[in-house]
Image 1 (cartoon, helix red, strand yellow):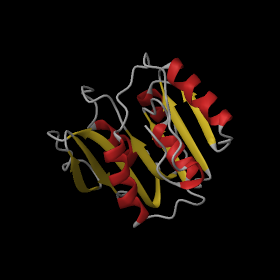
Image 2: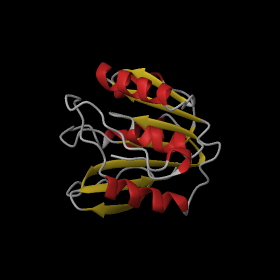
Image 3: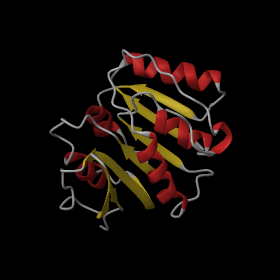
Image 4: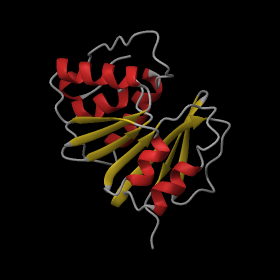
Length: 180
Protein backbone atom coordinates (compact mmCIF):
# COMPACT_ATOMS: atom_id res chain seq x y z
CA UNK A 1 0.00 0.00 0.00
CA UNK A 2 1.34 3.40 -0.90
CA UNK A 3 0.29 7.02 -1.28
CA UNK A 4 0.13 7.72 -5.02
CA UNK A 5 -0.16 11.50 -5.12
CA UNK A 6 0.31 14.78 -3.30
CA UNK A 7 2.90 15.78 -0.73
CA UNK A 8 3.36 12.19 0.53
CA UNK A 9 3.54 10.61 -2.94
CA UNK A 10 5.44 7.33 -2.84
CA UNK A 11 5.07 6.81 0.92
CA UNK A 12 4.71 3.10 1.71
CA UNK A 13 2.15 2.25 4.37
CA UNK A 14 2.79 -0.86 6.43
CA UNK A 15 -0.20 -1.39 8.72
CA UNK A 16 -0.14 -4.22 11.25
CA UNK A 17 -1.27 -7.52 9.74
CA UNK A 18 -3.88 -8.05 12.47
CA UNK A 19 -6.15 -5.16 11.40
CA UNK A 20 -9.65 -6.30 10.36
CA UNK A 21 -9.44 -4.78 6.86
CA UNK A 22 -9.48 -5.43 3.12
CA UNK A 23 -7.59 -2.39 1.79
CA UNK A 24 -8.35 -0.94 -1.61
CA UNK A 25 -5.68 -2.30 -3.96
CA UNK A 26 -3.08 0.11 -5.35
CA UNK A 27 -4.38 -0.64 -8.88
CA UNK A 28 -7.99 0.20 -7.97
CA UNK A 29 -6.95 3.25 -5.94
CA UNK A 30 -4.79 4.56 -8.78
CA UNK A 31 -7.68 4.11 -11.23
CA UNK A 32 -10.08 5.87 -8.83
CA UNK A 33 -7.80 8.86 -8.35
CA UNK A 34 -7.18 9.10 -12.10
CA UNK A 35 -10.95 9.42 -12.52
CA UNK A 36 -11.19 11.97 -9.71
CA UNK A 37 -8.29 14.04 -11.09
CA UNK A 38 -10.51 14.84 -14.07
CA UNK A 39 -13.59 15.66 -11.98
CA UNK A 40 -12.53 17.53 -8.84
CA UNK A 41 -9.91 19.82 -7.39
CA UNK A 42 -8.54 18.22 -4.23
CA UNK A 43 -7.29 21.43 -2.63
CA UNK A 44 -9.70 22.59 0.05
CA UNK A 45 -12.36 19.88 -0.25
CA UNK A 46 -14.05 18.15 2.67
CA UNK A 47 -14.13 14.35 2.64
CA UNK A 48 -16.02 11.78 4.70
CA UNK A 49 -14.28 8.38 4.60
CA UNK A 50 -16.65 5.66 5.85
CA UNK A 51 -15.25 2.27 6.88
CA UNK A 52 -11.84 3.94 6.71
CA UNK A 53 -9.86 0.89 7.83
CA UNK A 54 -6.12 1.56 7.55
CA UNK A 55 -6.83 5.14 6.45
CA UNK A 56 -5.23 4.51 3.07
CA UNK A 57 -7.90 6.57 1.24
CA UNK A 58 -8.06 9.24 3.98
CA UNK A 59 -4.30 9.76 3.79
CA UNK A 60 -4.45 9.93 -0.01
CA UNK A 61 -7.01 12.76 0.13
CA UNK A 62 -5.08 14.52 2.92
CA UNK A 63 -1.83 14.20 0.96
CA UNK A 64 -3.51 15.84 -2.03
CA UNK A 65 -4.62 18.90 -0.07
CA UNK A 66 -8.10 18.15 1.26
CA UNK A 67 -9.02 20.74 3.89
CA UNK A 68 -10.61 18.14 6.16
CA UNK A 69 -10.91 14.36 6.00
CA UNK A 70 -13.29 12.80 8.51
CA UNK A 71 -12.50 9.09 8.92
CA UNK A 72 -14.98 6.69 10.54
CA UNK A 73 -14.32 3.07 11.47
CA UNK A 74 -15.50 0.84 14.30
CA UNK A 75 -12.10 -0.81 14.83
CA UNK A 76 -10.11 0.87 17.58
CA UNK A 77 -6.91 -0.65 16.14
CA UNK A 78 -7.60 0.95 12.75
CA UNK A 79 -8.31 4.33 14.35
CA UNK A 80 -5.09 4.12 16.41
CA UNK A 81 -3.06 3.20 13.31
CA UNK A 82 -4.53 6.08 11.29
CA UNK A 83 -4.01 8.56 14.16
CA UNK A 84 -0.41 7.43 14.68
CA UNK A 85 0.41 7.50 10.96
CA UNK A 86 -1.26 10.90 10.48
CA UNK A 87 0.69 12.35 13.39
CA UNK A 88 3.96 10.85 12.13
CA UNK A 89 3.49 12.43 8.67
CA UNK A 90 1.98 15.69 9.94
CA UNK A 91 -1.42 15.17 8.33
CA UNK A 92 -3.33 17.48 10.66
CA UNK A 93 -6.33 17.59 8.33
CA UNK A 94 -7.53 14.07 9.29
CA UNK A 95 -10.11 13.76 12.07
CA UNK A 96 -11.02 10.23 13.22
CA UNK A 97 -14.11 8.74 14.86
CA UNK A 98 -14.37 5.26 16.31
CA UNK A 99 -18.00 4.44 15.57
CA UNK A 100 -20.39 2.15 13.79
CA UNK A 101 -20.78 3.84 10.39
CA UNK A 102 -24.58 3.61 10.31
CA UNK A 103 -24.92 5.07 13.82
CA UNK A 104 -22.48 7.82 12.82
CA UNK A 105 -24.53 8.59 9.69
CA UNK A 106 -27.71 8.79 11.79
CA UNK A 107 -26.14 11.68 13.73
CA UNK A 108 -24.19 13.37 10.91
CA UNK A 109 -25.52 16.66 9.56
CA UNK A 110 -22.48 18.19 7.85
CA UNK A 111 -22.29 18.32 4.06
CA UNK A 112 -19.21 17.08 2.23
CA UNK A 113 -17.66 17.58 -1.17
CA UNK A 114 -16.92 13.86 -1.31
CA UNK A 115 -18.09 10.82 0.63
CA UNK A 116 -16.15 7.59 0.14
CA UNK A 117 -17.43 4.28 1.55
CA UNK A 118 -15.45 1.04 1.48
CA UNK A 119 -17.61 -1.33 3.55
CA UNK A 120 -16.88 -5.02 4.08
CA UNK A 121 -18.01 -6.74 0.88
CA UNK A 122 -20.25 -9.14 2.81
CA UNK A 123 -22.16 -6.31 4.51
CA UNK A 124 -25.83 -6.64 3.55
CA UNK A 125 -26.49 -2.91 4.13
CA UNK A 126 -24.26 -1.63 1.30
CA UNK A 127 -27.32 -0.46 -0.75
CA UNK A 128 -28.44 1.60 2.27
CA UNK A 129 -25.37 3.85 2.07
CA UNK A 130 -26.49 5.87 -1.00
CA UNK A 131 -30.04 6.01 0.41
CA UNK A 132 -28.87 7.41 3.75
CA UNK A 133 -26.43 9.90 2.18
CA UNK A 134 -29.24 11.15 -0.11
CA UNK A 135 -31.91 11.23 2.61
CA UNK A 136 -29.64 13.14 5.02
CA UNK A 137 -28.44 15.48 2.25
CA UNK A 138 -24.79 14.87 3.16
CA UNK A 139 -23.40 15.91 -0.23
CA UNK A 140 -22.80 19.51 -1.19
CA UNK A 141 -24.58 20.52 -4.45
CA UNK A 142 -21.61 19.44 -6.59
CA UNK A 143 -20.66 16.62 -4.24
CA UNK A 144 -19.85 13.01 -5.03
CA UNK A 145 -20.46 9.73 -3.22
CA UNK A 146 -18.28 6.76 -4.13
CA UNK A 147 -19.08 3.28 -2.82
CA UNK A 148 -16.54 0.49 -3.27
CA UNK A 149 -18.14 -2.95 -3.52
CA UNK A 150 -17.88 -6.35 -5.19
CA UNK A 151 -18.17 -6.15 -8.98
CA UNK A 152 -21.09 -8.59 -9.01
CA UNK A 153 -23.17 -6.20 -6.88
CA UNK A 154 -25.36 -3.72 -8.74
CA UNK A 155 -26.19 -0.39 -7.07
CA UNK A 156 -27.64 1.29 -10.16
CA UNK A 157 -31.14 1.46 -8.65
CA UNK A 158 -29.97 3.57 -5.70
CA UNK A 159 -30.69 7.32 -5.56
CA UNK A 160 -28.28 9.54 -7.48
CA UNK A 161 -26.48 6.68 -9.27
CA UNK A 162 -24.26 7.91 -12.12
CA UNK A 163 -21.98 5.02 -13.12
CA UNK A 164 -20.09 1.91 -12.01
CA UNK A 165 -16.43 1.28 -12.82
CA UNK A 166 -15.10 -2.27 -12.46
CA UNK A 167 -11.54 -3.21 -11.51
CA UNK A 168 -11.34 -6.99 -11.22
CA UNK A 169 -13.45 -8.13 -8.27
CA UNK A 170 -13.86 -4.56 -7.01
CA UNK A 171 -16.10 -1.82 -8.36
CA UNK A 172 -16.66 1.83 -7.60
CA UNK A 173 -20.19 3.15 -7.93
CA UNK A 174 -20.53 6.93 -8.25
CA UNK A 175 -23.50 8.97 -7.03
CA UNK A 176 -24.41 12.64 -7.32
CA UNK A 177 -26.72 14.57 -4.96
CA UNK A 178 -30.40 13.87 -5.46
CA UNK A 179 -32.41 16.97 -6.32
CA UNK A 180 -35.18 17.75 -3.88
